[in-house]
Image (cartoon, rainbow, N blue to C red; front, side, top):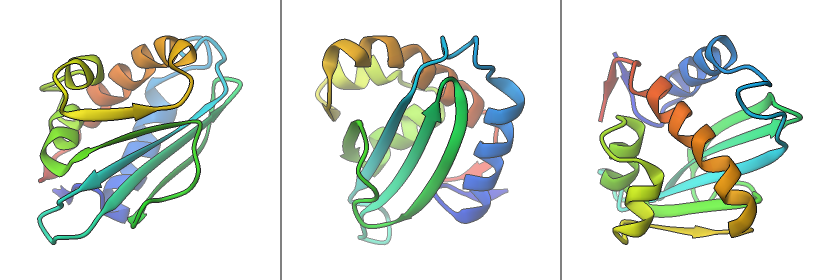
Length: 130
């Protein structure tokens, strides 16, 4: 079991993303997403960053603080983002329900949402301690 937003969790997400999502699945999109979790159990702010170039995973990062600049930023409380990572809640449901905030090009975000949902399904398969 790995702890959510730990380096071990990041490595497993990266491995499973590379194994489970093809450039065709992503429609060869180029985009970056930074998910910022506030009010984490340790009282810190933590991030999960993903960068995709022409449908290929370029980078997966986790850490303390706000994280790197990204084309899209999703910000919310730890529990809301954990629900998305467990595939209990889609990003669209969380956004509509006011559980997360999205900044970035909303038109392009519409194309990116299915990728986020697929990533959530992949993350949900990881034996994770939240």
